[in-house]
Image (cartoon, rainbow, N blue to C red; front, side, top):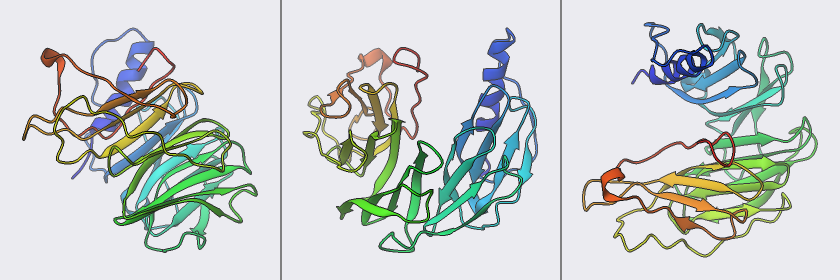
Length: 275
């Protein structure tokens, strides 16, 4: 399925800056599926997606130029430290790196992941040396860390029998990861030890499943997780919030007039107030 919404959202953001309030269509070309986006400032950003595609914009999302990633593996996550140094990751334990703004990318598969068929769903680097990845298959997941720029990786967390979906860090060593159900949440305050909080109370709703698809930290203490929802059996979209770095979670109850029943795949907060 071709995705155009991502590019439309980018130009809407740019439009707000210049005083416009409506969506603008920036392209009618055929693009592959996109999975992640990263802007380092108001003008420069990248998107990654299927078959290893990487596109870069230098005008706030108005135009996009394809970059050669040197991989055909689908890319799921991207992280840039500045407008030159960045990392991307994806299927078959793939990770790639650029030091020149994406003009060239180099990389390989990470052999420290127990299975080469895992997808690296999230990647975060605090600096050029220190970073974390979340890898997963349909039956298990792992969080690994590096202190030498990715030359060597150490498995810090192994999750058996459950997929892991996403991970987010607010700063070095402070992160949260989410996965297959409401009991699959982990958090770290030292970058090495991952703990599980008490399973959140889903406010009495009867969920056939409780996938937690994405996580966002808006401060060192505040974070949000979103996920499963379905009209079948009236299962509202899951919204969870923590105010203590992931140690406890509260279900954000929505009034019936505002309630949605969609499976939510992403959440983003600019700060503790604006989402």
